[in-house]
Length: 126
Image 1: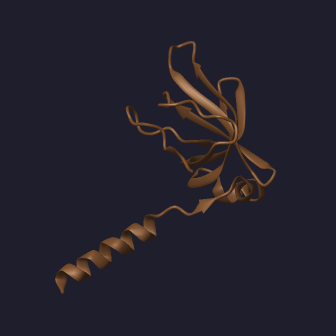
Image 2: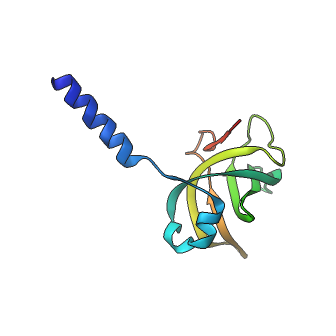
């Protein structure tokens, strides 16, 4: 009985912590609702670019689209395999309605970087 109760509590806690999957359209329609919050977004890759900064840090960027709307995706590090336009992906990270880095301003961006040394929070779906 205790074991069943313990498993039920663990399952309930995991469910409470689960992040709802949304689309780029959901975010574009209500960016304030998602600002500075974790989101899991499903959509299609467009304009994927893998780059290296002047400081030698690898990163990637792309647009995540679905239903005519898009959000920008940013991630530290390298992916095992570059993404292609049209790949369906699930991306988990922190959404920011607007942020400034140096002299650049970024809008509607989800940062899917994992913790230092971890892989980005991104998976390709079939």
